[in-house]
Image 1 (cartoon, rainbow, N blue to C red):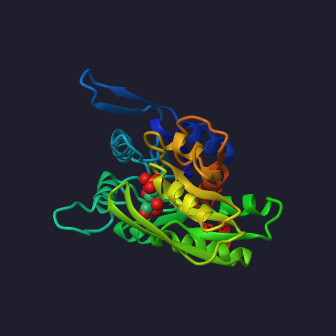
Image 2: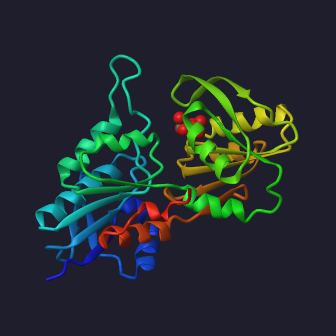
Length: 311
Ligand code: R5P
């Protein structure tokens, strides 16, 4: 008998899972996430998955219940004899802790990878990992989707692209900015960010000329929004005409949205890999639903996933 595709949603990503399932052309699989009186999570899959291709959609932003729930779901499917389990993690949390850069710290991204594999995941599908080499933390295949597939058509639809220049808000995002600069045949500049500690910026300087330009900052994560708001101020101080930002994952902790609203940024374009805490006139959300649905289809039909990328 042929294995069928079953798409399930974890609690954190229901809005997106519905869109992915609809775009794929199937209903969402049924499951229930129960809790013990003390809060322990106890998910149960309410339909047979024996011999099937199972996809769990769950971004693993905080709280850690999200990753835990995903692990338990994978374990349930494995014990229920699913043929092939893919953890679809549009935003892979804990990715910023990806190396031992000082004594006595954890490499959380590697630990999360170990946990997912130990739970029984056969494959990971994700988007814009904080560092692409995190793929190597998994000894199973990783389909690493690119937000450029979403951002490039959006940028192409904007009027007056002649004056744009791309900017990386820190050294880590240089490749992201370069990719877009090359695609559109534009220049790029780099902001050199130095951190005192996580989420706190000590200094920032810009390398390159931005006077009179419409700058597009490119980053993977917006958390406290300090990086993008400081970069926008710096670029405006250096004579930029306008500054907008493309940023894949809207973590947006604390007062980040208020900071964006009060900043020099004219617009921030994000993907719906994480649900937005509240709407803001300055934040435009683009959906990754169709891209994930198409990637699931290509994976299931043994077709190329890189054919979906825009280079
Ligand atoms: C850092 O390396 C990331 O690419 C982002 O720039 C960072 O996580 C953004 O954090 P925040 O919004 O708190 O400045």
